[in-house]
Image 1 (cartoon, helix red, strand yellow):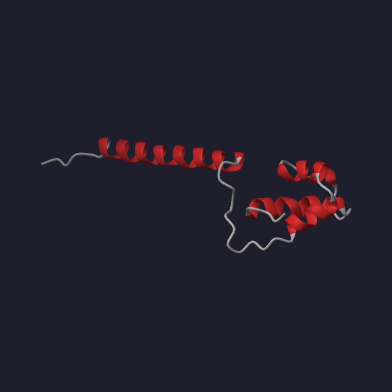
Image 2 (tube, rainbow, N blue to C red; image 1 turned 90 degrees about the horizontal axis):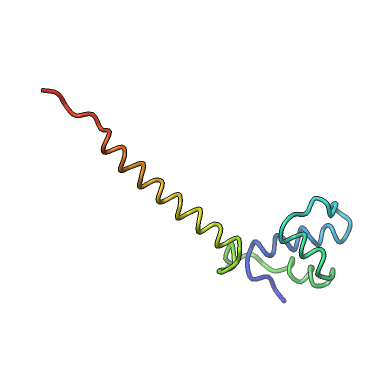
Length: 95
């Protein structure tokens, strides 16, 4: 089964590297650690060998995508607030 996103493909590559003994499993975090523990080397190889071209960065509905969307929404709100406050604090011209 091919990876559905670039993030999945990268995580599978990291897990595969640990499975083969090229990196330490203790260095894995998040999805790559879960993949390392739950998937065979053959499955990881299938995921990791997926071409990234045309794949989304994250799969919609995934934890990472949701977290990123919240950050983006919060950043937009903060920027709007800063712009609004800058207008209020603008010095008035004296005559």
